[in-house]
Length: 331
Image (cartoon, rainbow, N blue to C red):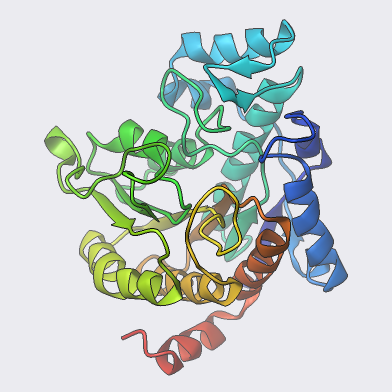
């Protein structure tokens, strides 16, 4: 198989209209795609075709009444749904459906061996979306639906979701906290100091899912070294114990030191290290099967630089990645 990284992107994602002053605005994806094109990296991806997801997949995790309400709110011209910060436009529900379809197409391409891994430049983001309500700029939970799709469509028994967005992925956690086939790991700024106020250490799952949620809240001001320590001493043992068959990344870049919505100090090179570390674990544990889905990141310069390095690592040949893992002293 050729060493290839799939790319999911559509110009239509830019038409999710949140207004000129909203943090989650089209300029976020524009800054990323501009940087990838300027550096010549854009042409190195395998650009994957995709269509809107069948609504049946979205309804597997989201209440059908909620899904219908999202479409109705957009069609009727409402500007927010469920909270003042979740802004919508006339096409937002359809674009969210398209985003889910893109992530599922990436999963299919990796499972079929057409690409080694994939990055999904989609919006709106998804990890805050609950079963029955929108939250934190999110309508449909892209990453959670992908995990469900891997379990049902592809018959996988163990899927890991690693969320390094600075805000806790409350929606993803709540959708899977009662299950043992999906391991959810989240590194985020401490919930006592940041939205959405969930993701404490004691939240470890419920019932049969007890022990399959790992929350790693980090103090404000945490930097590359703190994240590296958490990855090596907390994330790595959890992944090794779980032995995932696929690794999904909720790739938020809002722990960056200049991000306006949080108080962390991660650098672009810190994100590059984390990506290489996680790609190495995917290579070791699950045949390299990895799909990265963009979540947050609101300083345009830091976002573009961080995603450039993140994507560059995904494009690296696996052999080079393994050698870098040893040289970096991961083990």
